[in-house]
Image (cartoon, rainbow, N blue to C red; front, side):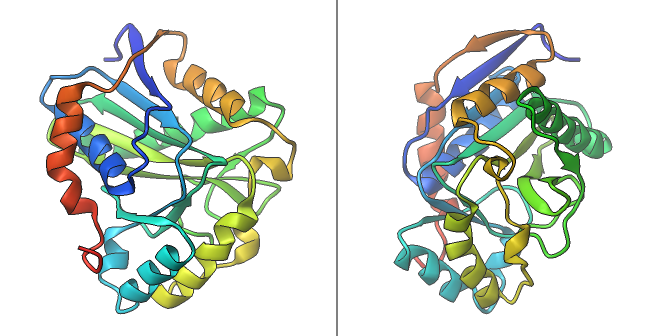
Length: 253
């Protein structure tokens, strides 16, 4: 059952990609343990490449990490599945964590809820989005959101524990070319097909600000509930520091 209010951590990122990943993981564990309520993290990150577990098993993983580092991106290994994604200052990064019994049974419903929330947020900004996979998109998934028929602007993944779920991803607001400059050579190193023209942004349709996208997205996730902005607990940050090493690419450890 949804709570009467939505707790939101807005814009509070550390600037350290493995630590930011560990913070999301720590929040998931604390929500699962009943130490935190439903929580939405949302913000604009620095230049980050988040690799998936499948990427770490590729013979080209070390080369892909090297490409990211050489271009000035901060690599991490994220907690959800899928392939590598790129977070830049012109995207909105989110992680929505909810307490739930038997989360595997409602996994697809949460994906659908999140994707439709993004579509509705876009509509409030006069942008038409559609849910569905684009051929040869980065980090392919059936719950991606695209515009203009083939330009992916939102990707999403999910991580489950015994008593909670975390749906995390990113909404590209502008500058898909910046993303492609590192994404395309990394995918080639990993041996993963990619169509650069499938990487899009909201700005392909009309210019909007990251703040406007964040506000619209928060409103959709809140779904009529009160929004309570809060800060990251010091205890959560300390827990994240103990998990950070798990999210450093092993080739850099």
